[in-house]
Image (cartoon, rainbow, N blue to C red; front, side):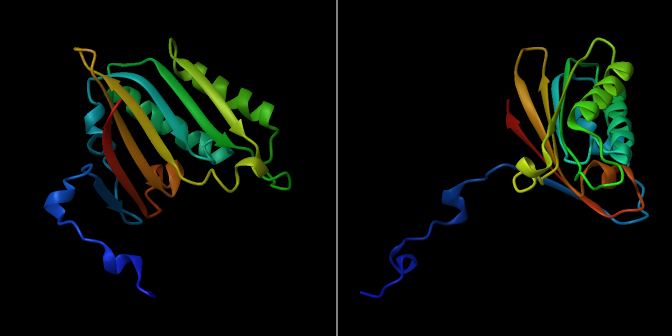
Length: 181
């Protein structure tokens, strides 16, 4: 009875499993220009109910610049943005650019409020140690509502995060897929 479980299973064909989510993949090499209007074409002329940014470094000094640049590009495409939620992480206490979570939350919040009138902006700074193991992935989750009230969530998984997406000197890959909001 030393039989492997997999030997007793009946495999399914790809047709039986069905499609799954279509996932778009875009890879940009170092030095390659990024066409943000094309990357975020699905956001053109839409009502954005909310943007959730999950990037541990989006609150750092350089990260804030990249974050703002990205959000301004999205705003230039969309008709309206109702809400922006930022999830970033506290830097290590020995980092030269360390700021306390309260100061970081206030700084990023002020940056957003200054540039996004009439948009509800929330910033959550996760503690360095509490989030180090489970806060690594970087993504944008953008909920769009159409004129009929239907919602679709656009998810952009960003290898290398926002900073690498916004800096053409770095290689990066973006995975984009949609779910029903």
